[in-house]
Amino acid sequence: MLVDDHTLISKKEMQNTLEQRGYGEMRQDKFFLKPFESLYFLFYKKLSLSKGKKKVTFDDMVQICNDFDRDALTKFLIYRDLRVRGYTVKDGFGFGSDFRVYERGQFGEKGAKYLVFGLTEGKQEKIGQLQKNIEEITKMGKEPILAVVERRGEVIYYKLSLVRFVENTKNIDAASFVSS
Image 1 (cartoon, one colour):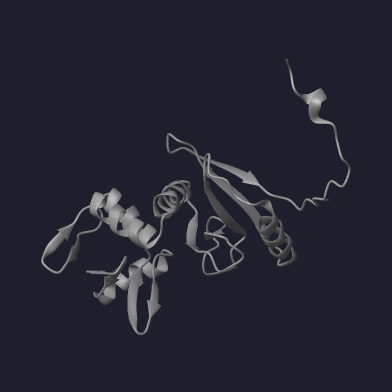
Image 2: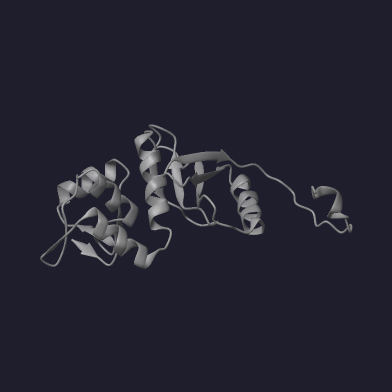
């Protein structure tokens, strides 16, 4: 059953199966799938979802998720790609990251190894906050990864490392950079 943009799973045996495989979370004694998880299961036709008496399709869910989060489709595409590659993926826990990603076979045994930031190709972002997040993530012993979703929906991953940007205080003549 759909509650806002989350899916409530009421069957205990289904909750246990999903939880063991790294899906969903308990909140106030109820088990919910995150929006990107619901989209994933709807995409592969592994979930029958309803809101009241109305059946919710994948396209319906995309629209509902977009109403709550304008980056919902980007998150779904990255989530789907990581899951297909065999990773266990959970919601990010801060530092601007979208996902925590566990090494294959390590979910439940070790903490997440990667923190993934999602971007859509062509979208402009300020580098300052990303730099601060990378510093904090690196201090925690995690690896920051940038996932860029291309216009065709393909996801490309970039491992990020610490970079120091310094303010350019020199007045540079840009005329030499312009071709005539």
